[in-house]
Amino acid sequence: MMEYKGYFARVEFDDADIFHGEVINLRDVITFEGETVNELKKAFKDSVDDYLAFCAERNEDPEKPYSGKFVVRVEPELHKNMTIAARKMGKSLNIWVKDALSKALENSTLSGITS
Image 1 (cartoon, helix red, strand yellow):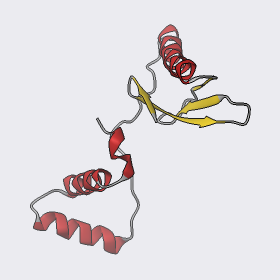
Image 2 (cartoon, helix red, strand yellow):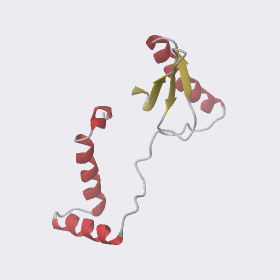
Image 3 (cartoon, helix red, strand yellow):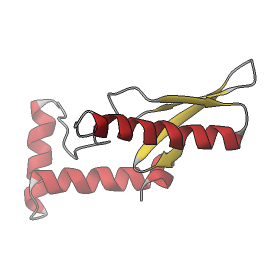
Image 4 (cartoon, one colour):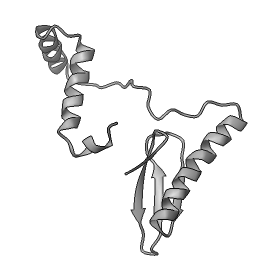
């Protein structure tokens, strides 16, 4: 996983010995490639910088990696039980869910990407 200016990229290596990368935390498409790790890192930074410059030229705000809001659909019984658990702890459902997700992330293999 690579990170630059809040943008995260996934990288794959193909049979032609070329690294291919794509920014994964946007709806817009930003891709890059390189034959060496140094070329790949430079191409990633250049691609993000080009994207930001392109947005600036068009007087558009670049897409932000994440807004901090998302919708999760759960069964009504789970929703009820989470609300009860949150109230027992003196928390709002939103804070309870945020805390539960943070704890789950700490225990996951992705915890190294948090800042």
